[in-house]
Amino acid sequence: QSALVHTFNGIPFSTRSSKELLHTLDSFEAREDDVLLVSYPKSGTHWLAEILKNLYRTQQGANGCGTVTLTSPIEFGDPSKYEDLRNLPSPRLIPTHLNYKMLPVQLKTKKCKMIYIIRNPKDTAVSLYHYYKDNPNLPTIDKWTTFLEMFLRGEVVCGSWFDHIHSWEDHKNDDNVLILYYEAMKKDATRSIEQLSNFLGVNLTPEKIHEIAMKSSFSEMKEQAQKENINPNNTVCALTSNKQLIFRKGTVGDWKNHFSTKQTKIFDAQIEEKMNSSQLMKCIEYEN
Ligand code: A3P
Image (tube, rainbow, N blue to C red; front, top):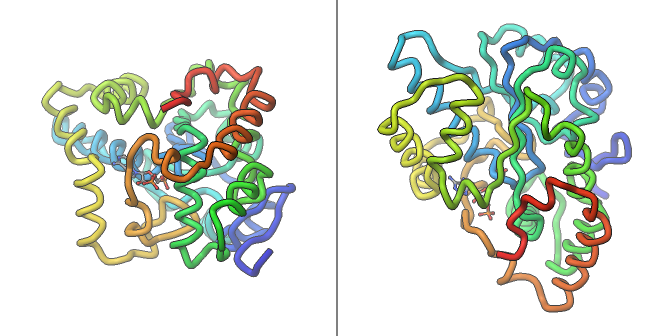
């Protein structure tokens, strides 16, 4: 591969996640009120982070005491970052692209709330392809065809999409886990915000929910990102601090503009073979 990627536990990681940090993930000290925002890359992590920030901020307006600290991803940086995380006020909202197995053990034993967002894998692959092309922190990719083969083999950052979903399968019904779907969020953001507020125990009026949906819309977030300077301390995805790389199209079904008939066939066959037993897969709006 390149100097930008290294392999840990058989999974390709950006070198922005140091080997030392990945080795010491289990020494991370979780707090019971930590909230984890988990995703395979390009599934809507920044969108969800924006909704959550606004959700807590709105609560502050209501009773004067709610706010949340959005931290950098748990796998980003080197072990010194744990010291930084220790100094941040609660509740902490912690993003991560780690699969369930790799999550620091205390997050599991303390039953921290975890939100896992899933996106149609074809759109995820397309989005990740563009991210590879546009993001200087990722290796150069020449062709979509080559990239799609890499994606299907799990030879992309954060590894196989299939494995990532499978790692959550046994935890989908855990009380501390909420599963959200990108396509469902696109269809009805209000409903997703309601689900999140119920899960987190935050009371919101319908007006506030509407306001959050507006503030976290694709166009609003894209416009905001264009106005902001790049802040290296503001990293939601370990692969970049440059938010301008994030807001590309924000639509459902862009895969149809990239996949050939043959590629669709191959992809569908892999889904059939690898995801046959997955209940999570059944909930994905796959055809659109
Ligand atoms: P596309 O590349 O298909 O446009 P992540 O935040 O996990 O890196 O995911 C990025 C993907 O989510 C990008 O997909 C991006 O456009 C999309 N996205 C970001 N904000 C969004 C929003 N508010 N609404 C819908 N999609 C959004």
